[in-house]
Length: 225
Image (cartoon, rainbow, N blue to C red; front, side, top):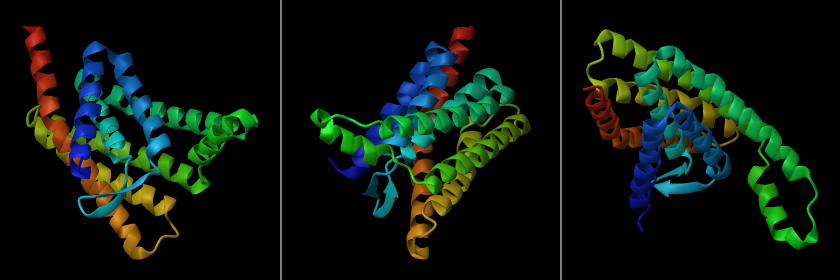
């Protein structure tokens, strides 16, 4: 299957599951944020070629975190959306710390292949961890601030505008911080490509998610009637 088709499939499946969780309850919605952070942790280092550019596979998972944030905002407002910053940082810290301890625990020869794979998978460089924290804190705060401003400015109208405007700006901030800190030793050309590719793909993923935001708004309105 072409890489671009897999991109669409990952986007639709992940975003649809986030929407399904939102329909079930707030705890489930926060759970999708945690799951997508874990997916980033496990698969984020996988480098792929997509739309003719080099990027990592974790972009869809990060876009889904923003998508979940918008659903939280629509249901519970700005204060609840800002809580995702603390929640996300806790999940990141929990995952990184516990995974490092688990990876350092000696394994028996019977699971030698698994031991080696786990060690490679969860051994993160310090600048990768720092990049994740800094990028998420700044990008998520800007994301929620822009979304809230547009919601207030247009009195809840133009859902497509606040979703995509907030995402486009915040995803650029995220890509700029994360890739600059994580790949600080990369050449200027490669670093620029990683930043722009990550920003483009995450923004495209949110375009895929926009109809799902309208579906959620329609279902909420219908349930209130």
